Image (tube, rainbow over the protein chains, first blue to last red):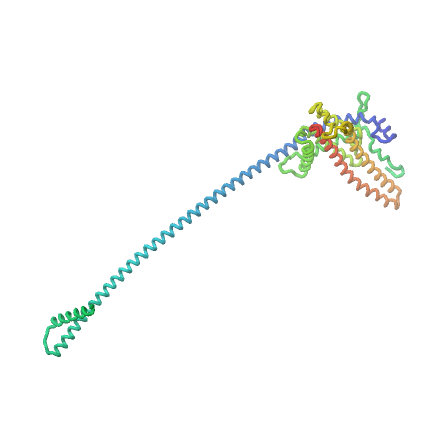
Length: 179
Length: 253
């Protein structure tokens, strides 16, 4: 074979130009075939997978973002509701407290009135009892005075007369006291 | 390989060996070891990428993650260096990167062939990129394209010199692009072969010299690691420079 025979003899095989046509021919043929293979089969396949992945990731990220926004909105709504409820509860509590205070006041007043009535009644009873006692005392004193007069002056007088006199005396005494 | 025969030439590994003989119009177009590995570079990479993406699951497994990483790596390279307008060229850039990466890496397997160590291959690719971006620039910007060679804001006196420099640097692009890859592969593989040959030769001496062969052998292991790095790095460099040239063509600085 002239190719290798020549190359072995003289220096670098690379400089043996008799091998160049074959190398160039097969380079052109195989590189063209390789280019078609890479351009039509290999790179589109890898590119498609990468593109699908990117689309899927973008899609998922979009979904996640939407979900996150939804969650934030729901949370805000919930917090607003919570605040409103808290305010309403405070209002209700205030009203209840005010009502209770009013009722308590009313009750106090009622009880105080009742007590005052009771006191007034008791005082009236007491006053009646006292005047009763006083009049009884007058009778006793009249009887005692009558007995003393009968014993001293030996005068017979009626109990009624004596009581009349005693009353007159008491009235006089009361007048004197008032003066 | 035996010690008594001496070392093989370290450049013998670059020989083109026809596997299926073929000729057309007086040219030898045989399918060679180089052609086989070009085919394997695409075959292995496509098999890997397609099988890794078979499931096409939402949450990628290990293999799918690796395939996607490769795709994203090139996509990001195009996006950051060329911008949105580079999108239509992404399949080409991706093919270029995969071809060079797998070609370089497969070439590191013992008994395989590194087609990127052939200057004619790297130059053909660099020339294609060069002609391609120049045509893109001319189609997009018309004659305005030539303003690319006039640096903005330069002093008027210097402009003629700068134009010469810019034109030279523009036309040197395919040369530097192809030679960088070719030279890296040539030097790396030659060096590996030299150390491997040395280890075999020393061990061939027998006896105590066997222990001495450990030294180049350990060096060979280190160099192999380095070459894996170089293989990936040079594929990246070739691809990113292509992106930058494309960016220049689309945006004229």
